[in-house]
Image 1 (cartoon, helix red, strand yellow):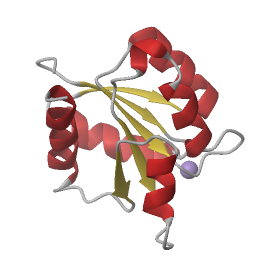
Image 2: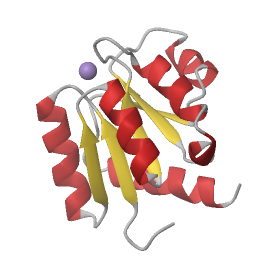
Image 3: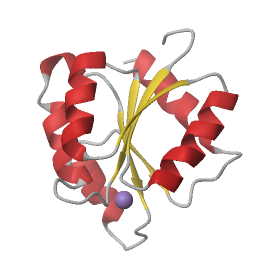
Length: 128
Ligand code: MN
């Protein structure tokens, strides 16, 4: 992990992007954002972040498709992709894992827990 972990957040909702930006900046993370799946894939390919957060409910290319495409990019294969979803329906967690996500965080984001959740995913990726 870099001293300042670089997180890419793919999210179409500007309020969510602002909230995550505020939380992560305060915790010393570096944040890149993309407002669509296609933009997120391009940015991930170019910047190779330490971790990618993907909103599942994205217009056009949804988070499952985005994750599958990210996992097909060889130099991103080891970058953890964490799904963010507001859906609490049974089977959602399984669906994100089936799509290739390395983890799952439920919306709404818990401001206090969020940085720790990310740190845990980053540590886990380090020990692979
Ligand atoms: Mn969304």
